Image (tube, rainbow, N blue to C red; front, side, top):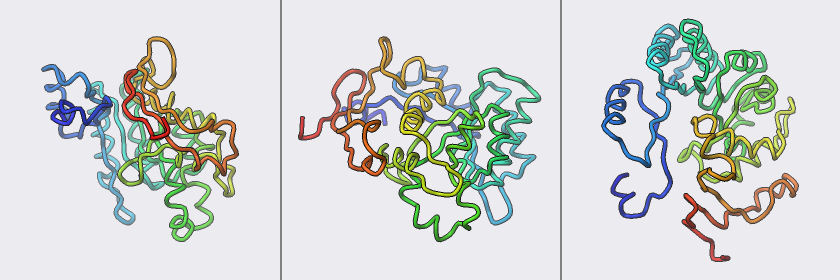
Length: 269
Protein backbone atom coordinates (compact mmCIF):
# COMPACT_ATOMS: atom_id res chain seq x y z
CA UNK A 1 0.00 0.00 0.00
CA UNK A 2 2.87 2.35 0.74
CA UNK A 3 4.31 1.76 -2.75
CA UNK A 4 0.92 2.33 -4.39
CA UNK A 5 0.60 5.52 -2.37
CA UNK A 6 4.04 6.75 -3.44
CA UNK A 7 3.25 6.05 -7.10
CA UNK A 8 0.02 8.02 -6.90
CA UNK A 9 -2.38 5.10 -7.36
CA UNK A 10 -3.81 5.06 -3.83
CA UNK A 11 -5.20 8.47 -2.93
CA UNK A 12 -7.71 8.07 -0.08
CA UNK A 13 -6.76 7.98 3.56
CA UNK A 14 -7.40 4.53 5.00
CA UNK A 15 -8.47 3.20 8.38
CA UNK A 16 -7.36 -0.37 9.04
CA UNK A 17 -8.93 -2.69 11.57
CA UNK A 18 -6.54 -4.66 13.76
CA UNK A 19 -6.76 -8.42 14.28
CA UNK A 20 -7.22 -9.33 17.95
CA UNK A 21 -3.90 -11.19 18.05
CA UNK A 22 -2.04 -8.24 16.46
CA UNK A 23 -2.95 -5.57 19.00
CA UNK A 24 0.53 -5.21 20.47
CA UNK A 25 2.26 -5.08 17.09
CA UNK A 26 -0.22 -2.47 15.85
CA UNK A 27 0.31 -0.35 18.95
CA UNK A 28 4.10 -0.48 18.44
CA UNK A 29 3.70 0.50 14.77
CA UNK A 30 1.63 3.51 15.78
CA UNK A 31 4.05 4.50 18.56
CA UNK A 32 6.89 4.41 16.01
CA UNK A 33 5.18 6.94 13.78
CA UNK A 34 3.01 4.77 11.53
CA UNK A 35 1.89 6.45 8.30
CA UNK A 36 0.01 9.74 8.14
CA UNK A 37 -2.49 8.38 5.61
CA UNK A 38 -3.20 5.11 7.48
CA UNK A 39 -5.17 5.20 10.73
CA UNK A 40 -5.63 2.32 13.13
CA UNK A 41 -9.29 1.60 13.73
CA UNK A 42 -11.11 -0.96 15.83
CA UNK A 43 -9.91 -4.36 16.95
CA UNK A 44 -11.81 -6.82 14.73
CA UNK A 45 -13.20 -10.03 16.21
CA UNK A 46 -14.85 -12.55 13.88
CA UNK A 47 -17.70 -14.74 15.10
CA UNK A 48 -17.74 -17.83 12.90
CA UNK A 49 -21.09 -19.56 12.68
CA UNK A 50 -20.98 -23.33 12.15
CA UNK A 51 -24.44 -24.81 12.22
CA UNK A 52 -25.81 -24.35 15.73
CA UNK A 53 -22.40 -23.46 17.15
CA UNK A 54 -20.46 -20.21 17.18
CA UNK A 55 -16.72 -19.71 17.52
CA UNK A 56 -15.37 -18.28 19.70
CA UNK A 57 -18.05 -19.52 22.09
CA UNK A 58 -19.71 -16.92 24.27
CA UNK A 59 -17.44 -16.98 27.34
CA UNK A 60 -14.28 -16.88 25.22
CA UNK A 61 -15.75 -14.08 23.12
CA UNK A 62 -16.59 -12.09 26.24
CA UNK A 63 -13.02 -12.50 27.51
CA UNK A 64 -11.55 -11.29 24.20
CA UNK A 65 -13.85 -8.27 24.15
CA UNK A 66 -13.06 -7.44 27.78
CA UNK A 67 -9.30 -7.55 27.11
CA UNK A 68 -9.47 -5.24 24.11
CA UNK A 69 -11.93 -2.92 25.86
CA UNK A 70 -9.73 -2.69 28.98
CA UNK A 71 -6.77 -1.73 26.77
CA UNK A 72 -8.74 1.21 25.36
CA UNK A 73 -9.47 -0.21 21.91
CA UNK A 74 -12.67 0.24 20.01
CA UNK A 75 -14.04 -3.26 19.32
CA UNK A 76 -15.78 -4.32 16.09
CA UNK A 77 -17.45 -7.74 16.11
CA UNK A 78 -18.35 -9.47 12.85
CA UNK A 79 -21.78 -10.98 13.49
CA UNK A 80 -24.39 -11.87 10.87
CA UNK A 81 -26.98 -14.36 12.14
CA UNK A 82 -29.21 -13.75 15.15
CA UNK A 83 -27.28 -15.96 17.56
CA UNK A 84 -23.98 -14.31 16.69
CA UNK A 85 -25.49 -10.82 17.01
CA UNK A 86 -26.91 -11.73 20.43
CA UNK A 87 -23.52 -13.10 21.52
CA UNK A 88 -21.82 -9.91 20.32
CA UNK A 89 -24.10 -7.55 22.22
CA UNK A 90 -23.85 -9.80 25.27
CA UNK A 91 -20.05 -9.72 25.24
CA UNK A 92 -19.95 -5.96 24.73
CA UNK A 93 -22.49 -5.38 27.50
CA UNK A 94 -20.43 -7.51 29.92
CA UNK A 95 -17.25 -5.58 29.13
CA UNK A 96 -18.99 -2.24 29.62
CA UNK A 97 -20.54 -3.36 32.91
CA UNK A 98 -17.12 -4.43 34.21
CA UNK A 99 -15.31 -1.31 33.04
CA UNK A 100 -17.62 1.57 32.00
CA UNK A 101 -16.31 3.85 29.26
CA UNK A 102 -18.30 6.80 28.05
CA UNK A 103 -17.36 7.07 24.38
CA UNK A 104 -16.32 3.58 23.35
CA UNK A 105 -18.26 3.36 20.03
CA UNK A 106 -17.95 -0.42 19.99
CA UNK A 107 -19.45 -1.83 16.81
CA UNK A 108 -21.31 -4.82 15.45
CA UNK A 109 -20.45 -5.35 11.80
CA UNK A 110 -23.34 -6.53 9.57
CA UNK A 111 -26.08 -7.37 12.11
CA UNK A 112 -27.76 -9.28 9.32
CA UNK A 113 -30.62 -10.90 11.26
CA UNK A 114 -31.97 -8.80 14.11
CA UNK A 115 -35.53 -9.06 15.53
CA UNK A 116 -36.91 -5.97 17.31
CA UNK A 117 -36.15 -7.25 20.82
CA UNK A 118 -32.50 -7.74 19.87
CA UNK A 119 -32.38 -4.27 18.30
CA UNK A 120 -33.63 -2.90 21.64
CA UNK A 121 -30.79 -4.70 23.45
CA UNK A 122 -28.24 -3.16 21.09
CA UNK A 123 -29.73 0.30 21.59
CA UNK A 124 -29.71 0.01 25.38
CA UNK A 125 -26.07 -1.13 25.29
CA UNK A 126 -25.08 1.95 23.28
CA UNK A 127 -23.45 -0.19 20.59
CA UNK A 128 -23.03 1.08 17.02
CA UNK A 129 -24.10 -1.06 14.06
CA UNK A 130 -22.27 -0.84 10.73
CA UNK A 131 -24.44 -2.60 8.17
CA UNK A 132 -24.73 -3.13 4.40
CA UNK A 133 -28.03 -2.01 2.80
CA UNK A 134 -26.64 -2.86 -0.63
CA UNK A 135 -26.94 -6.55 0.28
CA UNK A 136 -30.71 -6.09 0.02
CA UNK A 137 -30.22 -5.09 -3.62
CA UNK A 138 -27.56 -7.57 -4.68
CA UNK A 139 -28.82 -10.59 -2.72
CA UNK A 140 -32.59 -10.10 -2.79
CA UNK A 141 -33.42 -13.16 -4.90
CA UNK A 142 -31.28 -15.42 -2.73
CA UNK A 143 -32.81 -14.03 0.47
CA UNK A 144 -36.31 -14.66 -0.86
CA UNK A 145 -35.38 -18.27 -1.70
CA UNK A 146 -33.39 -19.16 1.40
CA UNK A 147 -34.75 -17.09 4.31
CA UNK A 148 -38.09 -18.20 5.79
CA UNK A 149 -40.80 -15.57 5.14
CA UNK A 150 -41.33 -14.97 8.87
CA UNK A 151 -37.63 -14.06 9.21
CA UNK A 152 -37.35 -11.78 6.20
CA UNK A 153 -38.53 -8.62 8.02
CA UNK A 154 -35.56 -9.08 10.39
CA UNK A 155 -32.95 -8.95 7.59
CA UNK A 156 -30.89 -5.76 7.88
CA UNK A 157 -33.76 -4.05 9.76
CA UNK A 158 -32.70 -0.42 9.42
CA UNK A 159 -35.97 1.06 10.65
CA UNK A 160 -36.03 -1.13 13.77
CA UNK A 161 -32.41 -0.25 14.59
CA UNK A 162 -32.99 3.49 14.20
CA UNK A 163 -36.19 3.28 16.23
CA UNK A 164 -34.24 1.55 19.03
CA UNK A 165 -31.77 4.45 19.11
CA UNK A 166 -28.85 2.46 17.67
CA UNK A 167 -26.09 4.63 16.14
CA UNK A 168 -26.13 3.34 12.58
CA UNK A 169 -23.62 3.50 9.74
CA UNK A 170 -23.39 1.81 6.36
CA UNK A 171 -20.67 0.41 4.15
CA UNK A 172 -20.35 -1.84 1.12
CA UNK A 173 -18.29 -4.78 2.46
CA UNK A 174 -16.45 -4.67 -0.88
CA UNK A 175 -15.29 -6.96 -2.51
CA UNK A 176 -18.25 -9.09 -1.35
CA UNK A 177 -20.35 -6.70 -3.42
CA UNK A 178 -19.39 -3.58 -5.36
CA UNK A 179 -18.25 -0.43 -3.53
CA UNK A 180 -20.85 1.88 -5.12
CA UNK A 181 -23.07 3.77 -2.67
CA UNK A 182 -26.18 4.15 -4.87
CA UNK A 183 -27.25 0.46 -4.61
CA UNK A 184 -26.98 0.85 -0.85
CA UNK A 185 -29.19 3.92 -0.87
CA UNK A 186 -31.70 2.04 -2.99
CA UNK A 187 -31.62 -1.01 -0.71
CA UNK A 188 -32.21 1.18 2.33
CA UNK A 189 -35.04 3.28 0.88
CA UNK A 190 -36.93 0.95 -1.47
CA UNK A 191 -37.34 -1.88 1.04
CA UNK A 192 -40.63 -3.62 0.34
CA UNK A 193 -41.47 -6.19 3.00
CA UNK A 194 -43.59 -6.82 6.03
CA UNK A 195 -42.26 -4.78 8.92
CA UNK A 196 -41.83 -1.36 7.28
CA UNK A 197 -38.02 -1.50 7.34
CA UNK A 198 -37.43 1.08 4.60
CA UNK A 199 -36.01 4.43 5.70
CA UNK A 200 -36.00 7.90 4.16
CA UNK A 201 -33.38 8.99 1.65
CA UNK A 202 -32.10 11.57 4.14
CA UNK A 203 -31.64 8.85 6.76
CA UNK A 204 -29.94 6.61 4.19
CA UNK A 205 -27.50 9.34 3.14
CA UNK A 206 -26.63 9.91 6.80
CA UNK A 207 -25.61 6.26 7.16
CA UNK A 208 -22.87 6.75 4.55
CA UNK A 209 -21.75 10.21 5.70
CA UNK A 210 -22.22 11.45 9.27
CA UNK A 211 -22.98 7.96 10.57
CA UNK A 212 -19.90 6.43 8.97
CA UNK A 213 -17.70 9.23 10.29
CA UNK A 214 -19.09 8.77 13.81
CA UNK A 215 -18.42 5.03 13.71
CA UNK A 216 -14.75 5.79 12.94
CA UNK A 217 -14.32 8.64 15.50
CA UNK A 218 -13.87 10.95 12.48
CA UNK A 219 -16.89 13.25 12.70
CA UNK A 220 -14.61 16.22 13.42
CA UNK A 221 -12.99 15.97 9.99
CA UNK A 222 -15.22 13.94 7.69
CA UNK A 223 -18.82 13.07 6.96
CA UNK A 224 -20.15 16.56 6.27
CA UNK A 225 -19.33 19.54 4.07
CA UNK A 226 -18.20 22.36 6.33
CA UNK A 227 -15.31 24.77 6.83
CA UNK A 228 -12.36 23.02 8.39
CA UNK A 229 -13.40 19.51 7.34
CA UNK A 230 -11.54 17.32 4.88
CA UNK A 231 -12.98 17.90 1.41
CA UNK A 232 -13.50 14.24 0.53
CA UNK A 233 -16.53 14.33 -1.76
CA UNK A 234 -18.30 12.48 -4.53
CA UNK A 235 -20.45 14.42 -7.00
CA UNK A 236 -23.30 12.36 -8.47
CA UNK A 237 -25.44 12.94 -11.53
CA UNK A 238 -28.64 13.93 -9.75
CA UNK A 239 -30.21 14.85 -6.45
CA UNK A 240 -31.16 11.64 -4.59
CA UNK A 241 -33.54 13.57 -2.34
CA UNK A 242 -35.52 14.81 -5.34
CA UNK A 243 -36.12 11.60 -7.31
CA UNK A 244 -38.43 8.64 -6.66
CA UNK A 245 -36.77 5.66 -5.03
CA UNK A 246 -37.17 3.60 -8.21
CA UNK A 247 -34.95 6.12 -10.03
CA UNK A 248 -32.08 6.07 -7.54
CA UNK A 249 -30.29 3.36 -9.51
CA UNK A 250 -30.00 5.72 -12.50
CA UNK A 251 -27.66 8.04 -10.57
CA UNK A 252 -23.98 7.82 -11.47
CA UNK A 253 -20.77 9.25 -9.98
CA UNK A 254 -19.46 12.25 -11.94
CA UNK A 255 -16.48 13.38 -9.89
CA UNK A 256 -14.39 12.28 -6.91
CA UNK A 257 -12.55 14.83 -4.77
CA UNK A 258 -9.95 13.78 -2.18
CA UNK A 259 -8.62 16.38 0.21
CA UNK A 260 -9.98 19.18 -1.97
CA UNK A 261 -8.23 17.88 -5.10
CA UNK A 262 -10.10 16.40 -8.05
CA UNK A 263 -9.02 12.75 -8.19
CA UNK A 264 -11.33 11.53 -10.96
CA UNK A 265 -13.82 12.94 -13.46
CA UNK A 266 -16.24 11.27 -15.83
CA UNK A 267 -16.04 12.08 -19.53
CA UNK A 268 -18.95 14.43 -19.02
CA UNK A 269 -16.67 16.87 -17.23
